[in-house]
Length: 451
Image 1 (cartoon, helix red, strand yellow):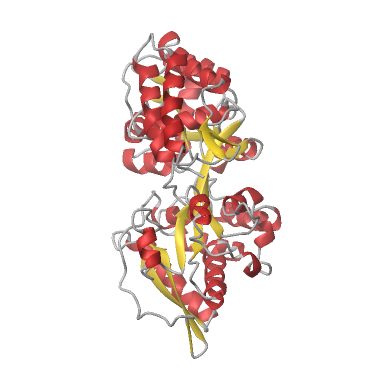
Image 2 (cartoon, helix red, strand yellow):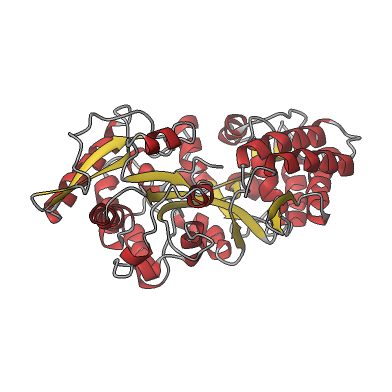
């Protein structure tokens, strides 16, 4: 869901955090951003004061960067791209030179020419060729030009309770890789009794629609597809029907999802933290939340890749003010590469975080391939303080399945799909075909404004 948690925020806090607010800024730079040969760039993404460790690390990094780059000064601000105020900030000259976006943002920003073309500036950027192509694609326009850089990513998988797997006679080293295997495992876990639930899922506050999107992806389908230049709903399909049928059968035939429904993430995490849930759809970033909030141990949990053919992935990155001068864009790319896309700093970051009771070794933000990935993996392994073997099924298989991003106007679509999830999970006689058709009509209306 838009709002992913990057590894760097975990390194500083161990839990997800939203970056909001504003920081006291420096005096405004000149139009070119250069004064006496020194370029000042405004950047957002700075953690608020309510996250003191995270903020401290960020401030340390700004000082270190400026020391290494004496011709660049950083005007750091809190926050990220806010769709409600973005256009006004851009028109009023208040938009940062380097601004934080989610993977759902670039397509629209590129279409509206609200991001600078950085293609010519990244040719000599360190490790640029090692960034995974699928993440660069998010920031690539229809013209084939590049308009931004990634700095974090997530993929949904299957989080599970290893202790319950053992009690149910399941192998915790080999989590389910298909939905049929999930159903079979959920039956064995539910049979343990005492209120234990085999599998749980979300169905409200847009989280149900978010997860249903990944369900459809895993079945080989799409939520939206572009045809003849127009976006249309695509989930009234075989993949959509199989997703709903599987959910329906787990809920009503197998009785492995429990009687309590209309759940959201906090409810499901509480069930997992209480030791009463076998599996749910989530990314590895959920594990620290469960461990810290419910006083559990990392050893109790494992994570596997999404069952099926594909998974929903997302992430965040940075784009550049289209009004920024070439000097500012070059300086901004230097900052983003040094701070966020720098395998050479991974060991330093892990060592710095090692004394902060922060999990190191979770399979997060795997942005690189080749030597860069090897360097990062080695650093994480050296300072790992979590049982990395428990995440091996996720790491090994996640790279083999397709990673698909959220549909256009995702949050509006999720509101519609919430209703579909709720009906399937609360009405035994729900008409699955009718649910898909009615939802598709509503989503077609939502997509009608997308180009």
